[in-house]
Image (cartoon, rainbow, N blue to C red; front, side, top):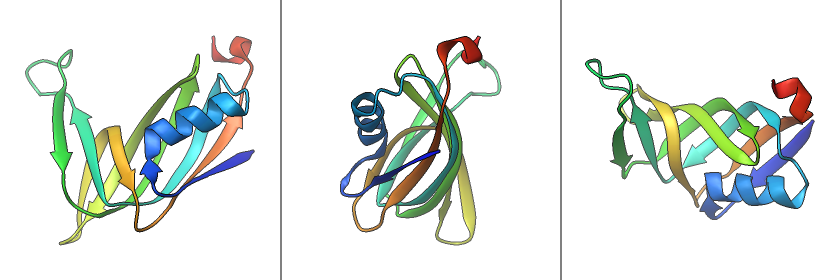
Amino acid sequence: MIVIEVRNAELLEALTREAKERGITNAAIVSLIGAADSFTLSTMPADDPADDMVTDYALPAEMHGTGEIVDGEVHVHATMAVAGDKGLAGHLRKAAIGHWFARAYVEPMSPLTMR
């Protein structure tokens, strides 16, 4: 298990860069925890699951999620807890980590395991 900590960076860019530097091309992101200053999520509209509805949120949020790295590409699904005890969930497109931190617990896998 490898722990990647992100501070003062865009989360997905930092995870992609760290994975590349560590030679990780395929992995399970077993757990993601932390908080973001702002974030972008996408979800599927009810009438067209092949489409993407992308929403930017200029809100701080507690965050947890899971995902994977396949052929060097980071893919994360997350729930973002915002003020008012609300959870916003979906495919995490961006997360600005500034005031707080994020940690991803990553389990590298061989390409054959991914098939």
